[in-house]
Amino acid sequence: MRFTPYRVIAGFMDGKDQHPLIEEAIDMAGSQAELATRCGCAQQHISKLLNREVSITAEMAVKIEKATEGKIPRWRARPDLWAPVSSEAAE
Image (tube, rainbow, N blue to C red; front, side, top):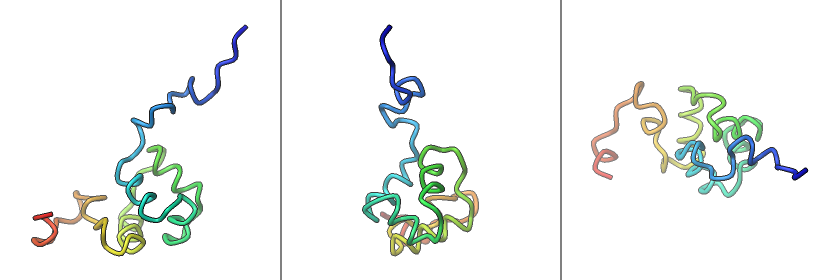
């Protein structure tokens, strides 16, 4: 009998279901742990956001904006709550 790793069964091998905005924030911070520190939350919460197990709240959108020094503005995380500022919309 052949062993199949859980990650393959669960479909995590390609990362296609991961949240691209959270991936970008993690890349900017350097790691999930560092992004969590900057956002004031647990690394496990960042992992859940990344894997779309929880949604990005308005509060977390603001924290991500601050953690990335404005490079990921809150409106990108929650366009239903904020509109882009005109200078940001041109980017």
